[in-house]
Image (cartoon, rainbow, N blue to C red; front, side, top):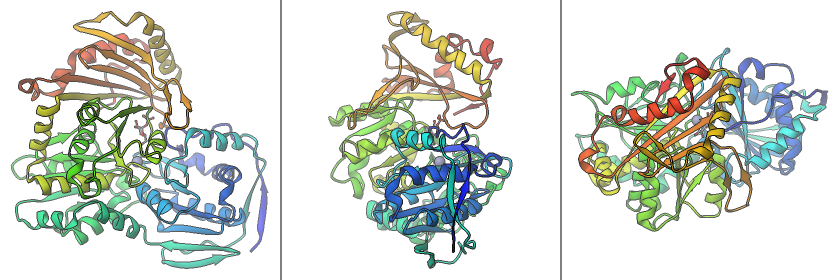
Length: 544
Ligand code: G1P
Ligand code: ZN
């Protein structure tokens, strides 16, 4: 085997977004494009030299080729040991688990999460630090800045490795271990949840569920854990075989894209419980019979009931939610005498809080929940948490959530996404809102009185780092809110997200259709931002 030094030149567009570098597959296939980014990781994360790297992805189109490229580069850059998921597969939370368990020097995860896959679709890459979490901004900025001066990368002339057979292989001085992608993760889940109790629930004869893996990475994980270990009936997991194009679907677990499982949990023949996960297995959607649990409520319910779950029986240290996530978790934290941290969008902001033991649970409105067990959000973990809760409480999902609203009040919640709009129109719209901010406080917007209006900025309480311009927040005196921000994960044009929340403390008014309750906030938020005039859109692309 020979190490080769290949001359290269910078690409200007390699700054990672909310969650790593995401581009069309075609962009990643541009000669040297993937290689430059990977070399920038090796050039800046110097502990990898002589260290251990975890490598895997969500199995989407180009995953296998990218793994072979990165393996050769890792060897050439002096990485001593590389742990690769069999078939090149590792869900994002499982990668985080493996990075932590074997005390490695970090991992490279190949995924564009919930974005569609295929030759014309999306691909992505991100580096996770030794704590198992997505690299914080200081690290992603260092990687980006290295990509801007890069003039060569290192690789080898070694043959492609057989990714499908478990075992230990050598290339040059490096050892490559092809590991079972599910085993370590499943073992961790067993320490957190009462598997016997969940097993009893599945065997009780009056409980059944469906889990939609959406042809993505969680299929093998869900089959092993739900069907093989917990005794759920065969067929509980649907769309369980990971496909390179996710069956041409959009592997995003929400009511729109996961409609197949929504059907199975609806109507007289519907099952008691259903869930879905996304492309790389970190998102989740939780459904009861004819009942949708908003991700914001899911976090709040988990926090309020964590003491009932084995892994959290000693209580939780604190909670964190991303800024646009509803304030339902704040109400629980308040009652438990805990802090609820409000962080910018993106899981990387939870890492320091988890490492410093300031929080145990965290979540985002974008179908992400997680805990200190790994440093990524974790789809299947959330499903197991709910299953454990159902087994302990012997109540339906609906009655658990309604009881929660009765105790804490209900935060009605909805999100409007305007996808693929013109970039400069989107930026103009945000500037317009920013200019309006000083005029808003103490004003009335229809029946709502503005309590605060700002451009959200966050100072990390652990390392003091500051992140500005993280979204426009308008808070009203009754606890309702409007939030605007531009997506940092899209690969085409801009996506404007509007997050709306209305608080209802009165149990007699907590069973209204969400769309009705939100109507006044919808009209205020669209007219304030001049959506139609600025974007030419008179309705959002997706409402969740
Ligand atoms: C979206 C979500 C965000 C999540 C991220 C990665 O980012 O809104 O909560 O952390 O995907 O899954 P956005 O496109 O809004 O920047
Ligand atoms: Zn994801």
